[in-house]
Image (cartoon, rainbow, N blue to C red; front, side):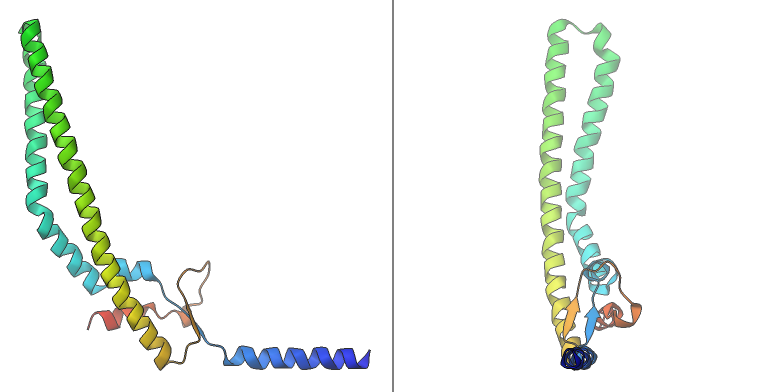
Length: 162
């Protein structure tokens, strides 16, 4: 029995010694994507890049709205043939708008994802550099709770802004 307690005490002392040498840090990747200077620059660059297409899309939508208002106003006095023709035109305008909007949204999402991936890769390189410099054994990105003293996100944000 005495050997068991001695072995358990030795194991506990060894585990505590190992735990003291183990250094953990936390990195909030979403915060980097939301708050970093490069993310804000990329966002404004994408906005400029897509502004012309957005304007064209808004113009198509406005044409559809005007045509629909005109149709509603004129519908009671239109012949059946004319009413059907205008309904087809409205349907075509609506389909054209929906197609252009879908393509725009897909292209915009793809472009944002490209920028996020590039920024993420850059941030991970910085995380590795910080981990090596501060002799951190493991950096966790997702966690339920994080003590602020192990959070290196601010250091990553600062390094990204240089």
